[in-house]
Length: 182
Image (cartoon, rainbow, N blue to C red; front, top):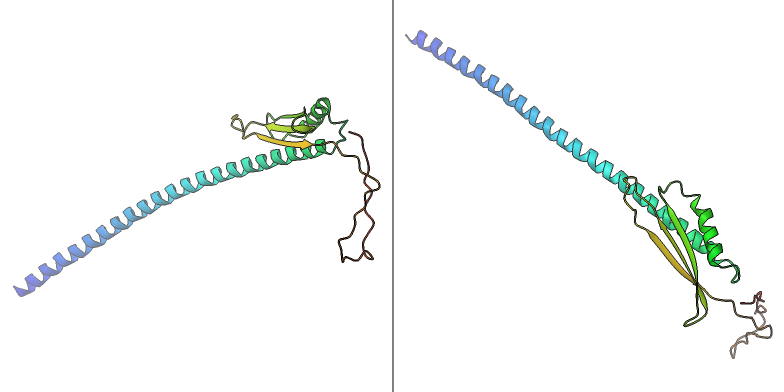
């Protein structure tokens, strides 16, 4: 009987090993499916994040372009002579600059000159630029302001005198500035 018992025990052991291998193969399949699902979720999240980062980069580039355009226009306006700095001239400058804004959809560029008399005589220059995002919503508008003052008449006889103890040998003569009437 011992022979029968041992063959019987061997068969049971063989069946148990085969069932364990089958369970292990099924477990590996489940682990692979879970890993694939996790990878898919990660890929979807990464793709959405990359799309958001790309949109933010483009929005930042548009904002930088708008700021640079408004700054350039304000610089051009402020470099004009006092008499040439009029509301009509500002509108003409803005119209010319607006034609170069094809990268800002729906761009609206305005420039204005306002005469100020209090507390001092000056001209206030304002440049504003608004545009729409690719989604059609308004972008963050840019508004820059500067003041221009009339140039004072330079006194031709004004000289810079050295401080006591300073040598005047290496000193350059004072620079003559152009005069313009306010």
